[in-house]
Structures are given as C-alpha cells and as structure tokens.
Image (tube, rainbow, N blue to C red; front, side, top):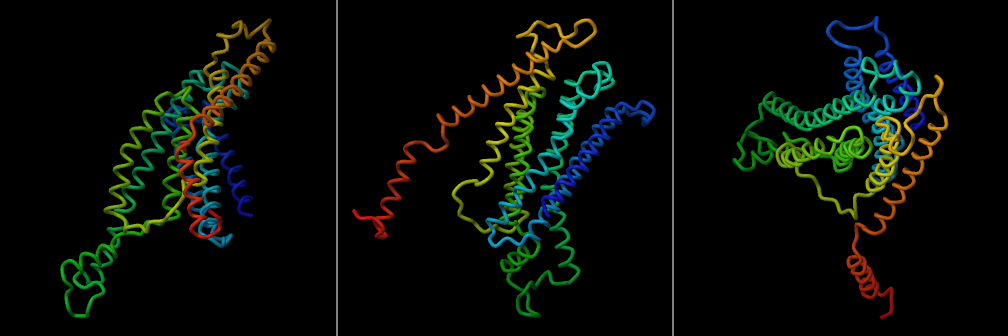
Length: 353
C-alpha cells in the first residue's frame, strides 16, 4: 500500500513537470516582465522543494503505519521511501529538459527562446541546486531557533522561569535552573530520523555532482562551499539548539554506502548521455553530418548510440575496477579484524587454541 501511494504521487509529479515544461512553449500565456522559461524554472524550484517536504512527511507516516518491529527495520524502510521519492522528484525536471525535450520537439522549437537545451539545463541546475542548498540551510538554521523561542514563550506564560521542576515555592540554584531550562527549551535530536534527513540532503548534493557535472561543472564547487558551511551549522545545531543526543554504536553508514555507489554508477551513464546527446561531442568521433536530403542521417544516429553504449560500459567497468583496487578498508585492517575475531573465539571457548 505504501509503495502504491508513492508511485501514484510520483505519476502526479510527472504530470506537473510535463505541464511546467509545456508552459515554456505557450507564448500567449506570459506574465508581464517574466519570460516563460524563467517562470517554468521558478515553478519547478517551488515544486521540487514543496513536494520533497510533502514526500518526507508521507514517508514517515507510511513507515510508522507499517509498524516494523525494530528501529533498524524502521530506519531502513524509511530511508528507501524517502531517498527514492526525493531523488526522482528532484532530478525529474533536469532529465526532462536534457532528454525528453529534444525528443518531443524539433531543433527550432525545443528549449525556447534560445533553442539551446544545454544552456537552459545548466541554468536550471544552477537555480535548483542553489535553491536546494538555501532551503536546507534555512530549515536547519531557523527551525530549531523558532522551536526554542516557542518553548521560551511557553515557560514565560506559565510563570516558572525560576523553578523548573524543583521544590514548589523555592527558587532553584542558578546552575540547576539553567540546566532544567536548557532541557525544557532545547528540542530533541531524533537519533533515527535526524541522521536520515541529513543524509538525504547529502545524497541530493551527491546526485547533482555526479550526474550533471558534464553540463554544470560548478556543482562540485557549490557543494564544497555548502558543506563547509554545513559543518559549522551542524556543530552549532547539536551544541546550542538541540539536547545532547544519545550515542549509538554502528558498524558503518549502512545502506547509505550502497545508495552512494548506485548514484555513482548512474552518474557514469548520465554524464556520457549528456556528452553525446546534449553537449554533442560525437563530431569528434563521427562525420558531423546529421542531415541528409532534408532527413535525419539515421546511420549517424546509430553510430552515436553505439558510442554512448560503449563509453557507458567502459566507464562502469573502470569504476568497478577502481573500487576493487582501492577498497575503503585496507588489507592490514582486514587482517587485524580477522585476528581479533580469532582471539574472541578463543576467549569465549568457541574455538580450540
């Protein structure tokens, strides 16, 4: 049921994206002082942020409705719903401009008014990426402050600033009042949903960097600047705006490592497709003759498609080889872990010396 609801919502999202992109081609319907292509990008940015927030809330409601037995199962299924929904919703407008727009319209009608899908895609990625970063920073910086302000107002309204849980009628010591005030005012950092929300933001950034660098090479620079500021804001948030979170022992980042690896594989294919079908580097390898007697030269199109498949497979194999050669855990660490496992078995009596 949960996945059916998410699929229906994604189909509705696809309809909104299609309408927003059709709006660019309607010259009669235009707001004064605002071009249709700029209006469509503005609507796309609001649609991406709004639907992402709605999908995140819906994913939490549906996952709680499923009533998983353990926190680990709950976190796993919440992560899958949240990540899949937000990835598709965030990058659907970019894929439409890059690949669907050239297939639906002729060269003189696609991506108006410049008929340059590369430039429009680069501009759209810049606006959506900056909007995503700005929304994330504003939410993490403003929301805890607003919640703390509301808690302070509630304490003042109750008239218990000098006695927060102590003996009735007697003021607490200064340090005790301050500690209790911090506990009442500061919001709780959820050890399950908090890291998931932070990792989803990193995943969206990673998607922009890995999948669209071919048309927007400034994405890594923006991501670096955003994460530099994000480190400071996370420290301020955990130290000043949230209660001290309970530490949890984990082996690794879990399913997020698989998500990043899958995105890196998708990025290989996406960048090759952008190079051949949007940037169009195929004249380097082929005769730059795509029109013949008023008709498209389908032989050249087939050659371009063949080059796309060959380069995609080549980059996928190259990334696989690099992953095998440069593993995240060194050989010395693996040997030490195996040695510790043997020692543990000997101490517990599960293995003879």
